[in-house]
Length: 117
Image 1 (cartoon, rainbow, N blue to C red):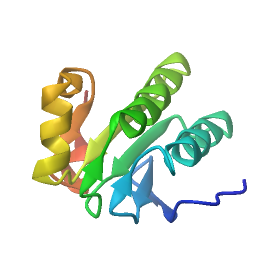
Image 2 (tube, one colour):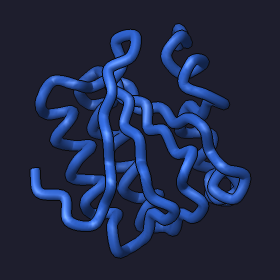
Image 3 (cartoon, rainbow, N blue to C red):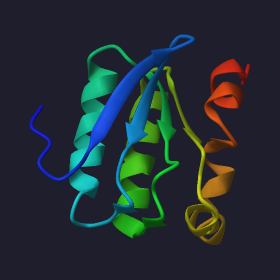
């Protein structure tokens, strides 16, 4: 996969594929890369994903849309896409759009990878 605009790293942890977003912004400039990367992960047989957002300080509607597309794709493949380590500014965007009711949002990776839901 050719990712031009995003710094992403993966890690296997307790049966989950953890996707670390090593960027301060998820916006129109890089959200299509994020969406493509998540969908490729799912198609390659990794439907349980935790997106770690600790470094992300800003997300716009295109970034929310990319994560939502990944969530829907994971769910369609009987998987799970959860979020962890959201900064307050990013969490407020999820609350404002009520997407915090759609996504499972965890304080840290340990909580995300040990949850039973």
